[in-house]
Image (tube, rainbow, N blue to C red):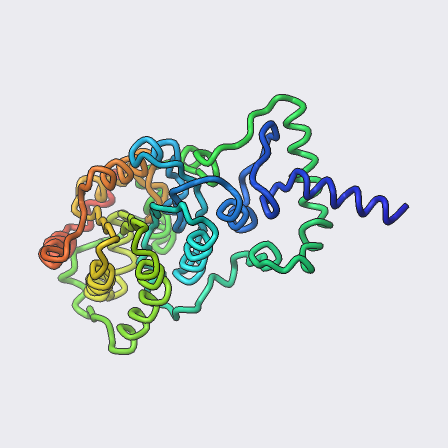
Amino acid sequence: MTLILMIAVAALVVSVDPFFHYHGPLKGISYILNNERYQNNGIMRNCEYDALVTGTSMSENFNTSLVDELFGVNSVKATYAGGYYKEIGDAERQALSYNPDLSVVIRSIDLFFALTDKDYRNPGAADPVFLNDDDPFNDDSYIYNADVLFDYVNAEISRTVRGVPADTFDSYMRFAEERPLGPAYALQMVLENTGGEIPDAPGLEKYTDQSGLTSDEKEMLLENIRANLTANIAENPDVEFYYFYPPYSIGDWYYNYVVEGKFPAYIETMEIITEELLKYDNVRLFCFFDETDMVTDLGNYSDMQHYSGEISDRILRWMAAGEHELKADSYMEYFDGIEAFYSEYDYNRMFDGLR
């Protein structure tokens, strides 16, 4: 009886396969999409697509339906909130190996994670090896998993019976509608450090102790870029890579770079990444920090980094139209302009909406 029960459970999990480990989504099943690090590998391995949306939470609010419309593709989303370059680079590599039809990759390039060892992964993020490898002998962790059976398989069967539509890649990991926007939220971390008082936030001139990258940091940055960005690009010359620097808010510029004395290093990091990426003809690289009205309007942000769903849509439209694209012969001039604006900005203006 125990053997019969185990076979029945295995057959049920493998048949429905909520994490797409064995096959793609079955027509008529109301699949739940809400667990990126457990579902992404199966999505990339077994779904039908020719375009991949990946990156960190800065890519989670992209609607794949808009990607399909703008780029003329059939896309899936496989993002990794808090994912360092290593994790996302590996995922990108897996998708390229699984799917010979993959022709477009859209990926955020987060500056937070640039200055880390090339093999560093987020220690707080799940790493379900049993779903990401090809070893059938460790699949028991998936097949005989109470959460998989009850929270996914049974729930999906119940949803199907009730006529609930399957989740889509538009809604997969999207949080834009769940988070309020505005200065009180965008500057929450700043205000927490001041006991809720609005601080004096002068421009860069007060913070004279500003430093660029050290030689060790440059070496580490280049190793990270070459292992987790340009290696995939070089090995897949027929794939077009749309990479972008997420437009973090003016609060992020102030709190993480001006105050911390890392403003020159921030600019230099973008310049080095850009130089390395633009060595390849199959890279389209975009930066939106010149949209200064958008970046300085904290009504667009739910915290210092995360922007609204509307901004996510704008980013896709800009990339599809080739706007804000960095070019090899002009990117240094672009960053000179960025450096001038954000170094001369009156950061006290951030708090106007709170006064």
